Image 1 (cartoon, rainbow, N blue to C red):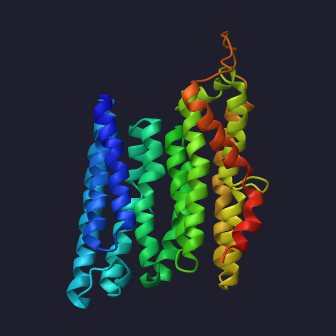
Image 2: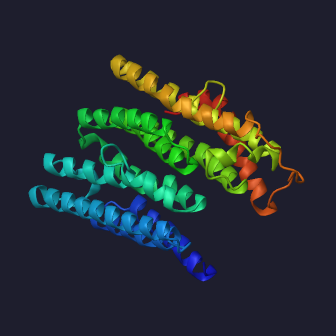
Image 3: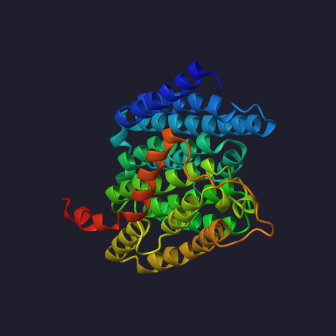
Length: 346
């Protein structure tokens, strides 16, 4: 891809996200989301493979439909209430339409069908942007409108997302699809607590990004797209595949690692809100995700290929990304001691 075109796309992504996050007017927020959609399309289709072109077309159609719904929701609210302010969304029909629009943009169940297909059709680096950076503006809009949204609807969608993200991920052999269903499952955890503690939703999203970034970067470094090739990846960079196991277990939410922190806080908050059955259900559903994370970790570090590949071990990777990846790996594994500091914030 032309370096100038790539720079323009990435700059537009930053611009679109900044406009949406900082705006308090619905039209400005919609404009930022549209800039984001148009900026990511060249990055999705840059390989010129038919699957990539298909993914870019699907992404454009889905995001255009979601943006139209969002604009219709804000116009309906302005028609009845006379307010274009994002925090003044109070009309019931507008709230329902907005929940639908943001769910489509994020890939929440039952509007999740597009996300695994698009992640499968693009490169790992663009997939990383789709799974992390491009989810931030819609989540910001959800946070700003959270007092007006329907808690029952959000809880139902959240439990369904956690369930489907776990069930559908069990059968996958492509690493990008597994990470897509992992993203859907984590979105369920973020959505379930949105109405009761929006700050906790934001913490969960930040920690999800911290754990997902090094996994995508590691898979991109060892050039692994399927479980079958993952079993031979340990011969390339043994140190990186060993830490990949810890990162995957952190994403699964096992206790000594960073990923346990948001799940612990969410279950605690749900219990405080007297939603113990819901907390129990979503905690049990996370076991489904744990299974396919363990399978990924098993393939990456424990499975020996039938014929060992004879080549030099690559102990040093590309120096420009090495420090970046190492920093995120450390954060994705060792952030649990920050819990007292989070509790100390007002």
